Length: 123
Image: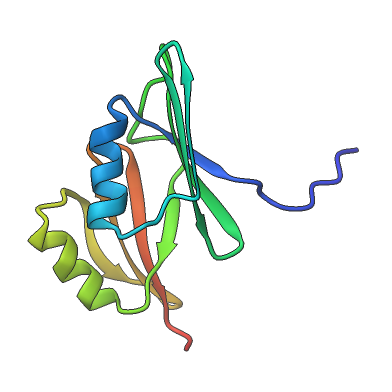
């Protein structure tokens, strides 16, 4: 039996690391904590967010997909986040909507990967 302790990281495949970093750092405001160029067209960037890590990876044959696993980024101010994303012409895959426990929306990164922008109703 596996004894999983935590999720080490979540990763999105990207085709153009420079363009991806411009979005994740310039639009989303994330700060890289690890950047590696491993040669042969393989690149890796990590962003520590709270106790978790979001990574971007570029490698030959590794393709982005809007239908893969989705990371939900918890934001402080949902309405301000939506306005910021619209101002940066970020494509919305699913318009903002409420649930009994949160508000969320789905947006696309420059490679078409889906990101959830999320705000819990509590505190």
